[in-house]
Image 1: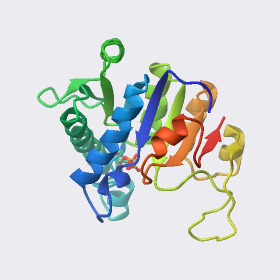
Image 2: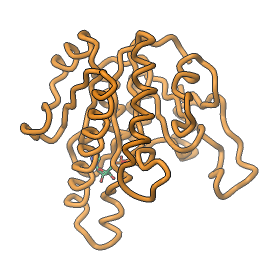
Image 3: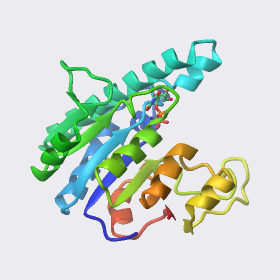
Image 4: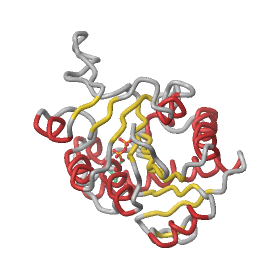
Length: 235
Ligand code: UDP
């Protein structure tokens, strides 16, 4: 892991479920917020992007006959709910936080304004970017890559429920091997399951390393930031 000053932490929506099958587990979100707080107190500037898969994914709606774009907007709204849950948890721990949504929602949060986000970070606030890129047919992985690029983050940390990138699906193939490091081109060429291709390409073109790790294990964010722990670096 290269030295980092500012990171973008992407959390899959499903990690907010904790042990539940759907939605948000406030106790687990509070635990996650504690890890984010510790990372911030270690001196890092933190941008957060949270997915929506614990509530709604556009593809799932489309698979049941919904119009894809309409379903994707529902997915984007789900990410705003998750962002508000995380903001609430962070602020209960005394961490000042602002949510900026790519779909404007004035009563609820700010719109995405890069210079304003810079100002928040300078004041020691965590900035949560919601609603991905604000357009259907994208995912929050692409949103994370985009915000990491425009906020000039030193790395994109992808906290998810698997502990890295494997050469095959570890849930289906017990012989699957985890990479310590892998190139963007291998990820794209072999279609390895990390993030969607547009997100990986955006990180490659802007030389943003992607660190994939399991956020489900307590203390893992701190370990990964210290260059320890199980992870895969895509660079
Ligand atoms: N979404 C979208 N555009 C974006 C970001 C998200 O349309 O820029 C929709 C899309 O339907 C997606 C859903 O929001 O399935 C939830 O996001 P995602 O699947 O990335 O969440 P995660 O898998 O990280 O929980």
